[in-house]
Image 1 (cartoon, rainbow, N blue to C red):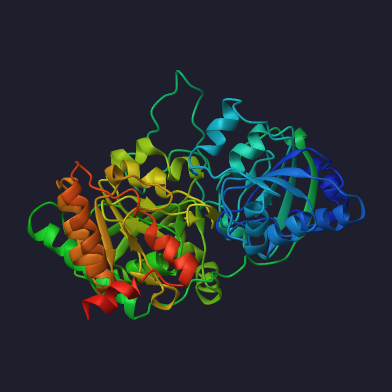
Image 2 (image 1 turned 90 degrees about the vertical axis):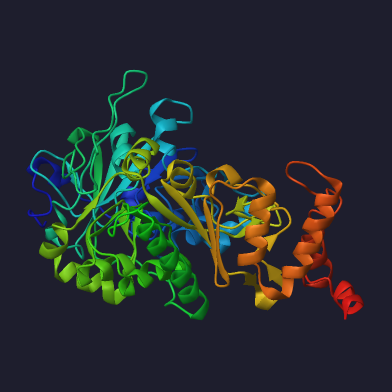
Length: 504
């Protein structure tokens, strides 16, 4: 029965199979599941629910913190369970159904989902399924490797199923800081004034009577799929480190910089990894996700403390953290995502934010989500929460995609997630454009001159010169603004080979 995992004795008769727990989910429900970037997600109930739906079809609205591990989104969508999904996903099978219009996907800023729930602006959560390390003596839920939206789902839901994961060490208790804002319009300020400040409780306090089922699992998180740094990402890191060092020498930053935020993914992880060889020390992080690079910085002593909402790690790094929790618990805190991503706190702490762009245009507008303006990739995630409120907002991208057939810097982005007003610095492997204090025409010159791959640089400069001749504060040729994307769809490449042949 594992009494150390269910310390409130009267809840022990709630233990059941994943199949029995899944039977509590009925057609049309809104279900909130734990999980944030493959960490702390439910490992049993989603799969039992999919198996049941194959025999007895049903559909739900599925809400999480962010993406799920173990192909849970694929399994649920393939079984026809997912009718509506929010606020973020990364699964290819689910993505295909979203783009076909078969699943309604609400792409949301990650700080906003529970605000919408709390203020009854979207359908309430009927049932929450939350992964836990244990349940305390008073019925509070101790999360595992993420908090995400789990706390608010459990508090706001009518009923709660708890998945207790026996593979998660009991030493995780004490890692979390659960703070829930009060209701508007009389909400008090969120009292985070330093990255390492704890303002809440170590567990999610709910009425134990809401717990209708407890399921035991024994499966680790899915390991991170982030790739190691390559030549291009190392170059991006080098350009950014050089820029930050110049900021320190100019007196605009201290040698410990400002608290750092980095989005999920290979490029952002590589940029943080580059800080291992930098001259900066006593670094801090206030982010939504901790990746391997964050743990490496803590291990090196170069970073003093890291605050986030989840830990998404490779298998080796995951095992290292779990085996040394006493060391990390004094250096890491995991918070609800509405706190890790809250604009009030981000603005107060003055973060340097590093996020990844799908494409950028010559004026600094950023598309993070849609290929050719229509095909959803993953979602905006937390990048908007951070970019709008940062001390310094940095976007990074490789200059080319698809073997050079696509330029990541284009005349006009096909979908805008972050306007030029929220973008301070753009970095590719070719260089860095500092856009602060620049008018649109100056921004275009800086981006074209520093960030564009040489194979596209003159082609983009030609577009900008022609647009300037027509005039305007932000010059564009509307009839040609998306010509690069159309050419790529038609010929397979954005390169204007006819123009190149004429020039030659």
